[in-house]
Image (tube, rainbow, N blue to C red; front, side, top):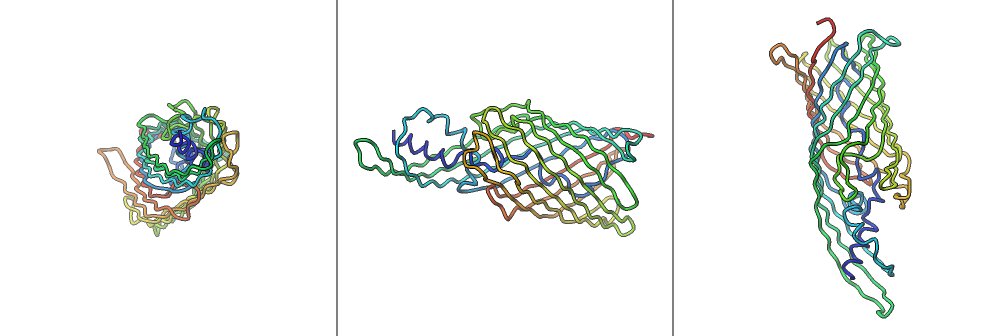
Length: 342
């Protein structure tokens, strides 16, 4: 019984109620708007494949965001006791996700800009390894005091589909300037389990609104790009948890040596600006923050008659609060399936 109480105590501190965004996941994938973020291609149909890789770790409450549903439901019916706890939680996680999408840029213009609509699919793998170490002081009716240490290790992994996404955007061009505004919405129909902490789906609606701008001087090959956005989340009906509003900004400085090759620096900053809410968010404000920097490389080539563009970016995270801290890699491959007038 005491071992069970130790596990329950671990849940109370290392719980999903201390997530800083439910399950420490975000609908908007940080780093995806780097080089040429403000540019909208000419009318046509385009295929884009984003491949994302992440590995990181966390400890203390920052690690607690991934553990509640795995441990908590086993012990919800235990009788109440007086329990004082010291809990140390450590987590290692990694993910590999591919997000193929199709973007249609309409012929003609609206408000002087090019309008596009797209659909995005998600497939991948997510895994965590959690170590919970508990030192408990338990008081029972006929026992003055009992002290015991408990250790609870578990791992969880998921390889599955995620929620589908739909996006819409409008973009403009003037001289060396290119800019756009866009929205991204997830549809919560992907596989999701309350007992898993590695779901690729979210089980709730979410909407992101982002504006991006690019300045590119073709005579010297210098590019400056930035994107700023906000993510709004609806409540997860199965956990009664609503992630707060999230802010993100990304940037890129790239030197293009030719139409084929560019090398530069990219980065992002994320901050949750309102507290999580709902019955499941019992710890109140637990806002996350992270900043990342790294190199980027773009390379374009011909595959037969098909032009293919690739972009590789690496991000090292720092200045992290209430989140997993790690390293991310992005490989984006894009090509036109058809272009108006061709």
